[in-house]
Length: 250
Ligand code: HEC
Image (cartoon, rainbow, N blue to C red; front, top):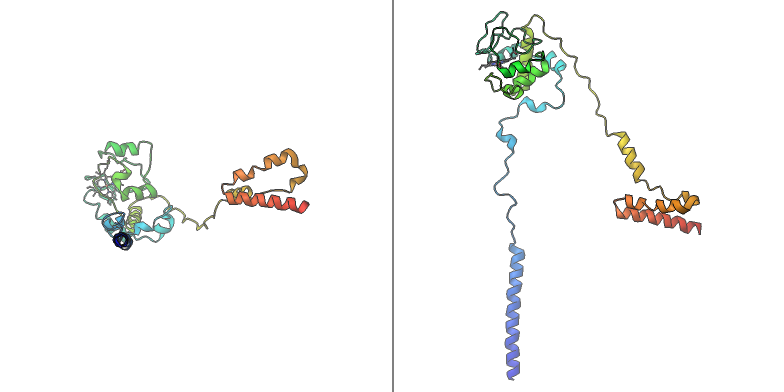
């Protein structure tokens, strides 16, 4: 009887242990909530930079021919009001904080006589570089990024439309502006490089047996395609086919 009593006690203890452990396990499963990998919530950096501008349409070369053909000189003049604190645009206009802008397109950089350019700007024009559509467009987007060290204290024009219209206005404020570039042809995107693909295809095709007649040494080397294949299954496939062929011959 005493034996049985202790058996019961032991059984009860074991049962309790089991229940406790079971509960812990179930609890772990039920409540195992992993913390987020990163704290806080994601913020799209683009949202911090203010509203989207025409800027984002840009990709690849800017089609000055097409864009300038439809640009508005009047709208460009309105944009130029942001420049007139420092620049005059009319012919024979005086230099202010910045040099006169008459005929600036096609003009050599830093070439207005009597204006005291920064050494950065003089350096940029040292090799006879002219202001043309592309470099003016880039300079006006972010002057101090395009000509680091320039003394032009102007943040830049973010909007592509503004810059294009301003270019059109600059063309109009000139005796002899550079010719409008031809609109870019619409070229269909070339898909893939054929050379590459055909090469890959060639290496991937297991060119197995066929050459059974010249077996011998050759076969020894032929075993290698298996190594070349990074994919083991593929290698096995090749072996299988080789075996299959052997079977046929027998
Ligand atoms: C706060 C005054 C200021 C404003 C505003 C300003 N500029 Fe300038 N700009 C300058 C100065 C100063 C220079 C000379 C820069 C140098 O020497 O590094 C300059 C130089 C230039 C040049 C180079 C001229 C040359 O002869 O090589 C161009 C082009 C130009 N500015 C265009 C503009 C346009 C377009 C705007 C308006 C969107 C503008 N700037 C607004 C002060 C200004």
